[in-house]
Length: 459
Image (cartoon, rainbow, N blue to C red; front, side, top):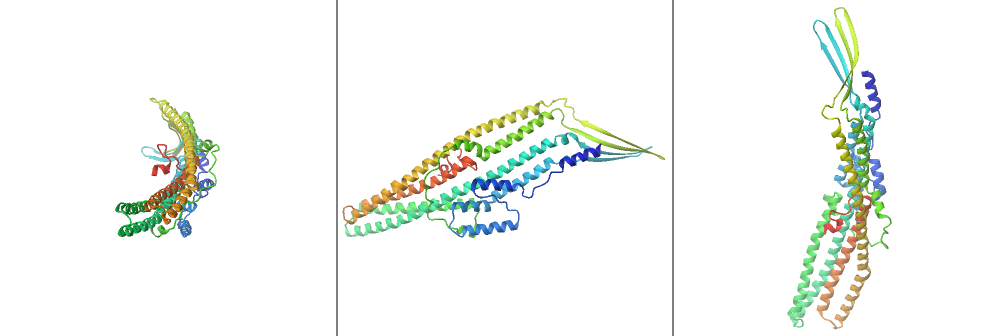
């Protein structure tokens, strides 16, 4: 009996083993399809050296959005820790699906007669439920893989957002530096005209105040630039000599046309990784619920094979048999276990439905922000900035022809600086809204709590 039980356990647990990739192949395939960059787990010094070489090559040229994402996936240690969590989940799965180890006891009694007893005990209930527990453990591991995909998407999204913010901040500094040079020249001119008596003190003060305002705005912009760059450094996991990388002078050009809102809600419900995780958890919970109903009356069922030798002087009598032991649910006939399973399962069902409703709202709101920010950025690019350029040219011509004074140049300069800054902010908001839209439809973090997009919440 004991040998048969142990053999059955070995047969049921024979397929339990750790994979070579630790579950990363599926994660790499999914992330490659969703963001164009496969996930890569750094396992040893060779992987680390290869990743380091790739990061150095990407940092040697001006950084692009795709390069920022690739660096983050290779260099972000929090993401690598998430991949380590996946490896831990695999070990937990293998431990769960292994059959319970039998126990062996040896009893030696002496007296008038010598009695030797050997006993092998096996948890029969655990063996009978092993196939179902195997399915549940495999489902839980698939959830862990999906969570690793989610962590990868989140890291990629944050890297893109940080990249666009950093580039926009640097572009704003460049515009203000050019404006400061112009304001300084006008301020010096006002000073010289004031010395000759050609410009009243009020006009001089206005020109000097404008220059002071530009200098203050530039200082604020530089501070923000350093902060945004540090956020990008953190997202990419960079430090030391790697911080000397270069960013482009300006944000990428707007696409020729915005994305069409075709079935964006359905895409979010079917594709978002957090929805998929909730579905997989619900499926695993359903199997666990079935297991609870099947074992509600018996908590422990153990079978023991007993082999006993009774030894008398000149005589040896072998005896063998078996022993069954189980708990009797005198006080609880499994009702609390079943009720807890039912309530837990229904809670998960309701949470999944709520998550799907929120995903639809996230997708709609993310697209509204995407489309609205595109229209605003395009309006500044095609209408506001060209008009400001025309006004500046005509104002300068009027000043040179003595048809206007320095006050007209001052007013135009203020308006031009404001228009350029708003245009940069509008283009930045569009690119971040595009990241948010992708995250709202496939996962990885989209709309923040309170209904604000991630970029709106940070401003």
